[in-house]
Length: 78
Image (cartoon, rainbow, N blue to C red; front, side, top):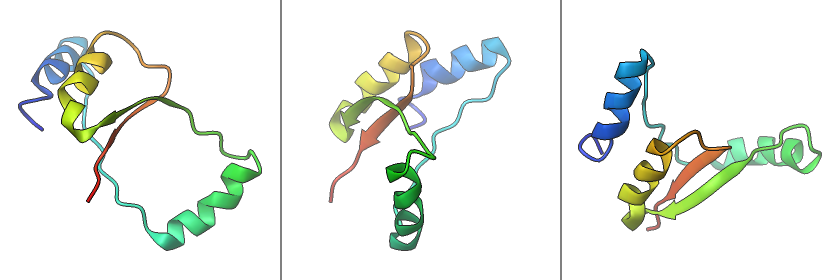
C-alpha cells in the first residue's frame, strides 16, 4: 500500500498535511450499536465511490485528482 499511495503522500506533504489509510474490520457489536443511528438518520455516512481491491490503484488515482465528496472505499472479500 505504501508504494500505491506514494503520489498521494507526496501531494499531502507538499500541502503540509498528513495522509494515512484507515483499515477497519467490522465487529458485530459495533455494527449492532451503529445500525440504529444510521437507520434513524442521526448518522448519515456518505460514500463517494467504491472500488474492489483489484482496483486500488484506480482508487488512489481518484483521490489524487481532487477532493472526493465523501469516503472512498476499497472492498476486500475473503
